[in-house]
Image 1: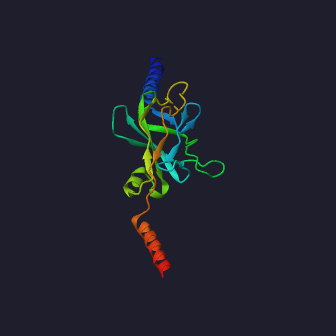
Image 2 (image 1 turned 90 degrees about the horizontal axis):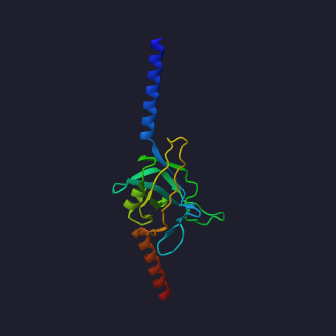
Image 3 (image 1 turned 60 degrees about the vertical axis):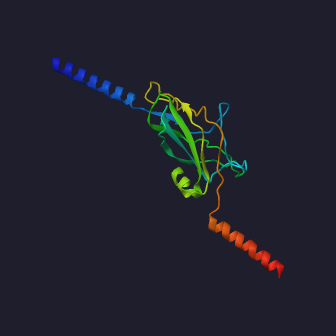
Length: 193
């Protein structure tokens, strides 16, 4: 009778170790929405115009440990929304749950929202490298992500602390601007004749 009792103890010990390890390494979760009233209202606008970004823009969360300056992309890029009339809305609504790799649930983490025009690249880094504007990021804010390993599991944390910000306007390539100036010059010359 000692053998079945030993096997049960071994199974319970193994199960306890697995659950403890899962809880220790559970990724924190956040709700990727930039408008959750009344606590979050963070539209993204284009510098100098006040126009809101829409579905031709991406947003992605980046995280860093509190006090760190090393930022890591989290989740996937999500398009900003247009309103019911098709006008840019300036928000990401229902971007889903983002699992924060390297950020355990229940532990504070710094977040930033990066935004960029889809026409400038598939990633924020590509948009910056393109050198034509059309990108920007929020100020850093601290969130304590939900822990899905808790019993019952925590809900994903909202992005409380995210503030509205502006992105740079897209500057046309010099070749396009030069062609425009050349055309304008030719029109002026033609008018003088």
